[in-house]
Length: 333
Image 1 (cartoon, one colour):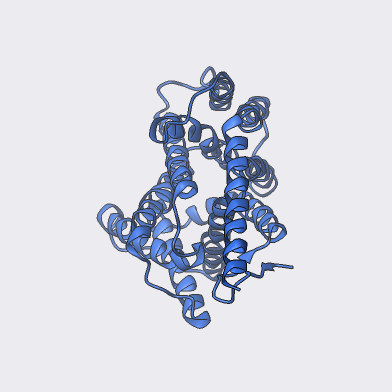
Image 2: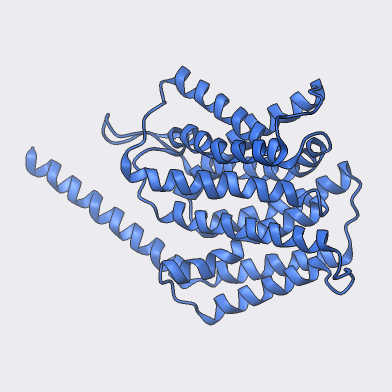
């Protein structure tokens, strides 16, 4: 039910499509509901130390799991570039940017702005992968950008309020970081599975963030209560461990259309959970802007011929490969 059995004994097991979709929805719920959890922790810990502790806790948890299951392997050279980019950009960079921004803007709005990464994958893929920018892609990007403007409510904000401007800029920068690594993950030829890569990604990410924490904030100085311990344990093991592994797994195996459309639910869960737990209001600009961002992403995903062509080509490739293998087996027999 959860694993596909390979044709050969030495062929690694793969998660079934049903399992991958369950993992995707689990990641949606975990990532969306984590926004008020992060804000609660930031009431006691500085943003950079928050990121350091969360990454370090996740690294320890994943290392222990890898040792106990015998799944801890040294990554080959071909995967080092992906491990470095994911660790430094997607983990360390994004986490620091988001945690600082959460001290400046509401969590619900932050969850939507960070999620605009699905918009930025389009121009990034066009620049680095030479993907053609069709009229549908330009239209989707424009609709999404209008949504970002509406969410930011620039017409109501005091332009002298540097906190709001800085927080918005940090969140959009985090979205760009997520988008760039998503393109890299999708188009990288993996030698190891995401669970085997995770310990090294987390360990690499801890180094720059921990160094920055000592330089900027000095030694950690906060009251380590049991509530804070539970908070960090949840973020380290469940969010940075399980949810991140689930994301990596589905990005590797499922269609980008399916993944990104499903991830549209993350900011919805973030806005609702922030309203319930933190008593944040769901304003009309936030609702309208969120709808515009979703619409822009949907335009890019649903009217995207290259995705369908790529999928069809992949099916043909897999079919021809299977036919060659079958023909080889018959010839050898």
